[in-house]
Structure formats: structure tokens, C-alpha cells
Length: 497
Image (cartoon, rainbow, N blue to C red):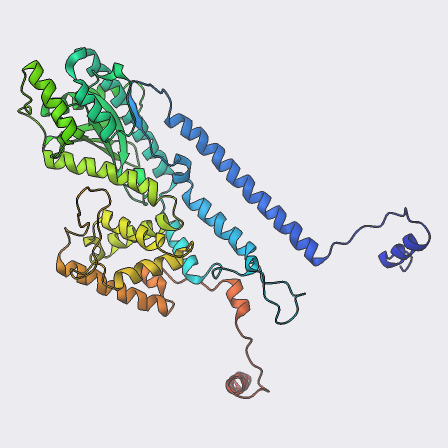
């Protein structure tokens, strides 16, 4: 056994035969490094496979491009939306391995390099509870596929409807001033000159679909359809009549189309489970009350030269609703530019949306105001925040009284004039939400975040269990001695029984 042993073979290799093959036994440090490397490679492979799948879906969603039809997709990539939960979980898993304790070989009192100092407590109980709650409220795969299917079918059908209306309209139906207003005001991109006669300029995604805030159970998504002229009742009816015909050739599903003139929108219902519906809101940048002075003068001069006074059609749609749809388009663009790339922002908004659905007190808070508040609270922090810290910071912001009438308020960044995003809330609703946030903070302080999230408490992780102090033996004094005596007494009773 001694001759076959590894230690003897190493000595023989060192003194007699340097070419003797002896297996190398890795140290604990080398083995841990190798395990970490393999784990990272596995995570990268999973992430790459997911990206390939969503890229293929992304190409299907953008199929049949046409330069004459302006379809503004979300500025952020679609795969970031569908892969949000998986990326967050991979990120926190990597953070836990990266934030390792300082090396043991350093001398006592030696300062730890800044790169080795953890900026936050990795995988805190609040983080685990919020991520567990997020995984339960995130839409399932069937719902995501249903949303993808009905949205893609609707966008293709609207493009065909726009083409059919283009064939009916004369080329001079839309003036250059109208075209310029549409392309520069809300579309964000200039449209070629040969599209001046197109009545329907493009379709944009807004609301929870464009912001990536879908929850499990959400059945309604919104689209904005931009028209070159002020939308009318006759145009709305024409679109509603043509949509079923245009959707029939490329869709096996049976869709029901209903128009709502008082709401200036069209609703499409799907018949296949899970049943989804798309709300298509019709609007135009020309519905704004205060157009730019230069464009107004320019349009007035051209109208005066032609001798045709500009008047609104008799059956023009509700102006208030059309302005609300334009505001929704600005909100979606702002969210994609400011809040979407902010760490933990989308997760916290999803959790708060679920809170607003469960608790009637929080349901009185406007969704746009909540999104502004979460973005402002997280972006004003000194560094990136985890889910638990971000949730606590948002609740602290509300608990300090930002919603109260005498508080600082919350300005809407998407409006030219100073507009309070909380203007629709009553005084009682503001006080109730503030008191509820203060109570939620107390629950977080006593490690009862599961009550705020409406879920069961999760068991302690292995890392936190290792950090706890070991139970004292019966020979020691204090609390451990009492516990030891109690155990002995219980054992004696069991034996007597």
C-alpha cells in the first residue's frame, strides 16, 4: 500500500524518475474555483439559449416590414421584456458568488480593498420574499404566447386596413402641414413624402404592454392608432368593419370586433383560451388644443391661400379621450427611456400593481403616479438597489408624506405645463395610502414583509442559518443552562412514561 500511495510516488518522481505520471490532487480553493467556473458557464448557456429563442420570436413579431407603414415598437428590446424574471434571478445568483468575504491570509487590521467590500447584504430575506412573490405574479407562458398572438394579428390587420384606405383616398387628401404634424409630434420619426395620402400613419403599443408590466391574469392590452387627420366616427366604423375581414386569412382564431364611439376605441376579443382582448384607441396629434404657433400660422396661411377654411368634421371623436391617448403614448416613451433600464424598478412596480389589486386602499392610487414615484425613489439613490432595499425606499418615500396635499407633490414630466400626477386623488385617499405605507414599514422592520406581499413566510436560507449562533450546551451558564435542564427534565418524563 505504501508503494502504491500517492506520497511515495511523488517522492519517487522527485528523486528517481521525474517522468513518472502522478495525478494532481486539486486543493479546496482550486476545486471551488473550478465549480464556480462551471456554474457560470452553465448560466451563460441557459441565457444564450433563451436569447436565441426570443430573437426568433422577435423576428416573427417584426415580420413583413413595410416602409410605408410606421409601426413604432418598444424602444427596449422585446426579449428584455419576456426575459425579465430570468435575468433578475441570474443576476442575484452571480452577485452572491461575487460578494465573497475578504481573504483569510490578510493580517489583522489590514484594510480590505474596496472591490472586496460588499455594497449590500447578498440575498436578504426581503429580496427572497419579493422575488418569490414576483415569480407568482409573473404571467405564465400560455398568457405570454396569447398576448404575442393577438397583438401580432392585430398589427398586421391594421396595416392591411391602412393599405385599403390608402387605395380609396385621393393622393391630395392629406396636406403637408398635417403630415408634418403627425410625423414630428408623436411618431418620433419622419415618414417619407410618398405617404402624405395615408390616413392611418401607424400603430404604437402603450400601457402595461409597452412598459413590460403584465401580471398573471391581465387580459387587456392597449394599442394606439395614429391618424393623419382628426379621427371621425365614420373612420372608426370603417376600421371596425374591415378588421374581421383582414384578420381572417392569416389567423385561425375567431376574433370578435366591437367599436365604442363614445370611448373612441375598438376592442378585439379572442375566442381561444386564455381569452385576451386588445383595445385599439384612435387619435391624432391634431387633437391638441394648443398647436405650435409657427405651424398654426403656416397652416393658416396655406388655408388662406387655398381659400378653404379649416373646420372640424361634424362627427369628430371625443377630444378629451383622444388627448388622453396621446398622453398614454408619451407615458410609454418616457417609461422606456427612464424606468425600464433602472435596476429593480420594473419588479417593484409589478409588486405594487399586485398590491393595488389586492388592497382597496392602494387601488385608489393612479398607475401613472405610482410609476413616477417608484422611478424617482430608485433613481435618486446613491447606487443600485436590490428588490428589498428598493421596496423599503419606495415605502419610506410614501410614508414621509409625499402624497399629502401639503407635501411636495409629484409633477408629470410628460406635460408642458406644471401638472400634478396626483391631482385625481382625494384627500382621504392620500391619507389612507400614507398610513398604510407607514404600517408596511413597521412590518418590514419586524421582518414580516410576507404580510405586506400577501404570501406565506419563506423558510430561512442555509446561509442565514449558518450565521446564527450555536445553541449553548447544558454545562454553560445562562440561557443555555436553562435549556439543558429543560431537555433533561423532558427526557426523564419520557423515560418514566
